[in-house]
Image 1 (tube, rainbow, N blue to C red):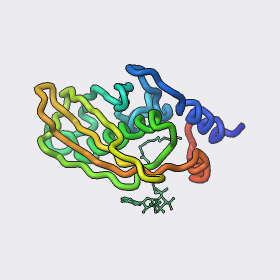
Image 2: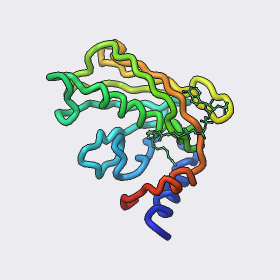
Image 3: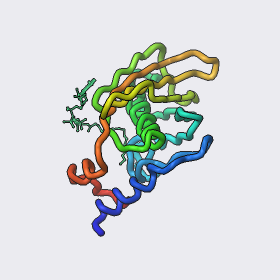
Image 4: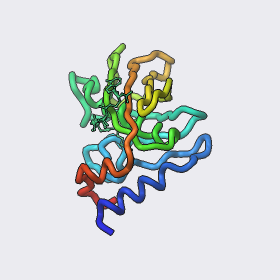
Length: 166
Ligand SMILES: CCCCCCCCCCCC(=O)SCCNC(=O)CCNC(=O)[C@H](O)C(C)(C)COP(=O)(O)OP(=O)(O)OC[C@H]1O[C@@H](n2cnc3c(N)ncnc32)[C@H](O)[C@@H]1OP(=O)(O)O
């Protein structure tokens, strides 16, 4: 089995039922959003919360844009990755076709936020999803919607990808 085939096999195993409250597995160890072995990554950890996924997350100095404020692209990365965890609950791989983020207030370095994402509707191959980033006082600092399009696991194999170890 090639490295790519081994990685795709681990992904297939992740699309199984996860109990409510369960921590969800990283997409792979080097994923920019959640991989524990990516030195540039966000190491997002998400869990199932009913039909949603939730995470508690803080950004660090690697993610700064304007002084003290998290770069908008970093916020979008983490939200996009949160949606990637939602796919485990949906039970099918999919890829981001469209991602929007409304930045409602500065996201601050070193501050913990709550992320929550859920599927709002499904039409054929399209998954319409939404997410929010909320401060500890309940203020919403960013909201997002996205369209994911379901693909077979072979999509990732065709992309040639995984030059990673799992
Ligand atoms: C294994 C575990 C991994 C799990 C994932 C783990 C990693 C998670 C990480 C976060 C997620 C990512 O970063 S994912 C990586 C970034 N994204 C990508 O690389 C995607 C690049 N784009 C593509 O590969 C392609 O465009 C696809 C596969 C998305 C779609 O191509 P296609 O298969 O030719 O499909 P296409 O006909 O164009 O569109 C499909 C349907 O969507 C509709 N559609 C298209 N665009 C839109 C849109 N903006 N808004 C509404 N609807 C739209 C079309 O009208 C059509 O509807 P209808 O006519 O069928 O009704």
